[in-house]
Length: 281
Image 1 (spheres, rainbow, N blue to C red):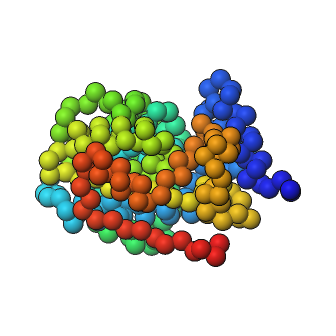
Image 2: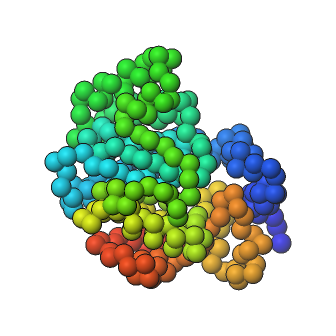
């Protein structure tokens, strides 16, 4: 059997997973080999689309006369959601992760992509209510980044980043109006995800809302076009444990399993949207 690109990536990530500080080693691998964390137009596009949809749900279901307290699961490298919430005057974001990826450099990279898309008249297709004074504030940071530290930039947009276990945040009960995530759930194993949802239920205010986007596809297919987005489903649990890795784990849960998990922790579902895949892929 011929070795495919995804086989090589799986082997490399499996090897990296046994290194000390494997996430940092993988960060170097992605940045310099696969370019998997570059903020290109495709990457920014799906992130800003998520921001648009989160904001749409907020406007539809919550009272937005006052700015909200927002919790984001998965800070990542580029604060697209927090910047969008700031520009749209939706609320202040507390973003939690188990690794620290956000840097001043990556923040400025994100600002420059916002600027580029606005100059191309593309940003308004996603963010329809940008506050001019807040935009000017961000552009002053983008123009002279040396005058600001990352901490100062975060404070300006109301972003607080925390490194903690989302199953046990030690944050006050009923402290958030809106909780969101972006293609994060699929990387969390079921027993851990159930604990996270239980904690989110505790943190969410009685009239609050959650919005989570989940990518159900085989992520190796993003790297290797020779396989389908369903490729990982053909492997047994035992075989998949050998292939899977702690760097970018994939739980392979299907949509109904997420719905069942919501039900098991007592979380009601107000609205759901699925995008059907192509079975011919």
